[in-house]
Length: 263
Length: 352
Image 1 (cartoon, each protein chain N blue to C red):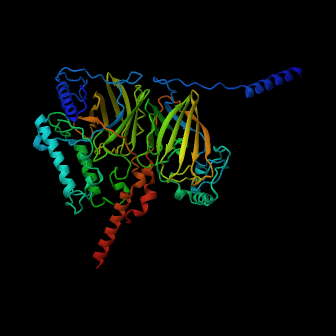
Image 2: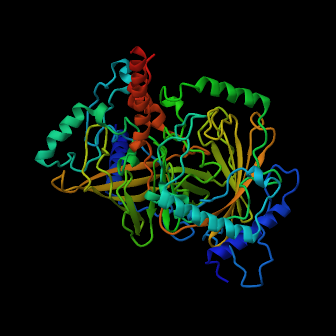
Image 3: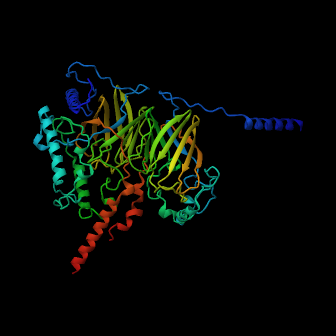
């Protein structure tokens, strides 16, 4: 009996110790030019693309797909749990949610914008050089090139926005502006205007994980800036590589079927 | 010597190209092995290829392969692989003249209907109004009379099987060109383009950006924002049953040259109807502003022999833009809608 209590006490004190002990910040291996090396193939492993806010499971939009395309549950990735919409914007989100299969640009394979590109359920690859960090996304062949030199201005608005990056210690900080207003944050109708401003932070956490944060600001839609955060996981399979998911082809029946010649 | 002026870039490129030709073994499938800068220019400070901090050659930057050189040699130039310097200058003058005429009178009428054999239409396209005429962007000049190298400078004959297959496709397509989206070219559907692999010039915006990281070279072609992320660690290709529009590229360095081997193309490859394409490419930076690009294409079921091409890729100022093709593909919808309207009118008229 005393032996069991001794073991229990030992285990409990160990648990207490690890919850108190500080994990020393991870220092990633360096590239040849001395920067934290973020190169590799990464993927989020959560349900953020279904719904940034916490959500229970729910039936999917297509009855014949049953459980295969039902909405999975998720704890949510928004700090503070709720996205702070302006009162006037709440109605638009409600309408988006009610009509999401018609309105969600992901259904049409449109470019996802930032930050959605990061947490779509597909991997992406970071190719890191001194002056540019290229991120190639498997979804829709989306891509962006982050300028790591002196910041430059966007020549025009674009779906993937305009990215200027710099290092803050172990963190890659990316400032994203000039995104088209047509993208959504997720499949639950969370949206923004053309005033969207996103600041991302990529911080290596262990050899095969990274902490990702994005601060989202849009005074037309939200009452204050808000933040999402999640880990990203390295795809460690041997010879892993991105494959093609050129989805415009898969949307043709949806978009152009009605224009097909009738027999 | 600084290779700043276009003329000196042209001269140097032409000289390098000529030395490439002389080094190409006669029956070889592969393009010339080494990009040795020719020593025929007067002695000056030798240019050394820039290296990345990790020691690999630096191919990075924003580039264009915009050119006036056709893929295949015009019949009138059969047997003539290179222009002389004087002829090249003349060509440049003709190109300036052509742009002038286009800007003042518009492009000459042509068949833009997408239907083979239809006559010239009444529409006057004028890309120069939008700054999209090729002469309004930087041109990468070459003394070659065709992109395809060698004495013939043309694509080899099709195999009998390929000829049969393409004839059958043409027969099935005739009269059905606009029945549905799947009948239109892959480029019009914003799925894939013919100028991504091999890296060939497009009608406009023939721009690309190269970013290199440890163990990878990424090449983004502006249209349709297609990125090839090429591993250089000598890994095997993906399994043979996985086929992709642009195949699976695997690369390695041979001295200062990036060699890329691409297989696993789909049967519906965007490249000229080939079903089992194999592409080998070589990228060598030959001066500050020029990458010499060489490629070999083979598909034994399609062509009777492999064929190779060569063209310079030249540096440009500025950045590439996002080409969100599918997101704004009004062209495809309007083409189909127009065909339906034309059919309805034809039916109405025949009912009278």
